[in-house]
Image (cartoon, rainbow, N blue to C red; front, side):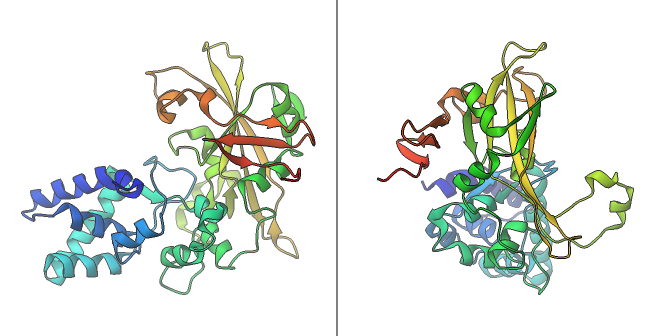
Amino acid sequence: MSATKEILKPASKLLITEFGKRGITLKPTLSYQLISAAFGFWSHESTVDYTVPFEVLNDRHYFGAKPLFHHSLLCERVERLLSLDHQRSKDLTLLIVDLLTHHHPIRVQTLKVLYEPEYDATREMIFRVLQSKNSEPSPLASVAIALKQLPALPANTIDGHLRLMCSAPIVMNEVRRTVGEFIDQAPTWIWCYPSPFVKEAFPSLADQGFRKPRIEDEWMVPAVKPRTEIGVGFVLLQQCASEFADVAYAVVSGHYEFKTTARDPKWSDIKVLSIPRDEVTHFRHKALAEILGHPVDELPLLSRCRACGELIAVADAKPILCCSCPR
């Protein structure tokens, strides 16, 4: 089974069950077609061919990319694949969107598509599929950047973001230092595209593009009103002391904000945030090891090249951060 299908399998079972309650027999193969159509892809095979990175997300998704659904295409596919009338297809379209939003939320990990070299050949195609069918700019910053609706970021890879981040200031326990100094003080692991279930990672997962103002925005505290921002796609983890837990981690995240008030609108420098996370299992949230499926110290460990002193990291025998030494 492909990695894509493995992630979508619980959603497939959910659709089959809910359709069955409404007297419709939905074959597993068709359920995957409908899930793919919900995100704008004409067929499930295309999502597999282009290794579209679906992920399960936190249904509260305070930050990060909210799932974008293509109602018209989904309705058309429901009507054609299940041979139903238009009104019944519209009702089932709303059901599918509700299930994929609130009961088993999934989305495309757009930051991965934007930052990873493996998507160089398919990036534009994937983002054009995800783009709204109307002429409005995308509500996702990643899509807007790729389609040149927003300026390019100062860096466009995990490696590039981390190198820019190293000189950024960070405050921990009222002590101000750079991220580079933070990395050098103790073993530090990097988690690329962390789980949306880790709330401390939300800034690094931010993907908010253009959005029309809403009435409810006026009720919000000015400092937290929605803005155009995008995360760096990774967090740094380092053990730290805590009076409440035997094990705790400093979770360091980063994101860019788009400065629209400047004469020449541009992206800000990386804004860095460090949030402590107590590893208390069975209390409100899972421990990081439970979410990861392995101990934290099995994540890629950041280290310095002995020759040039630049940061390097290896995951599964594959370098994810390389120094500039000649190969």
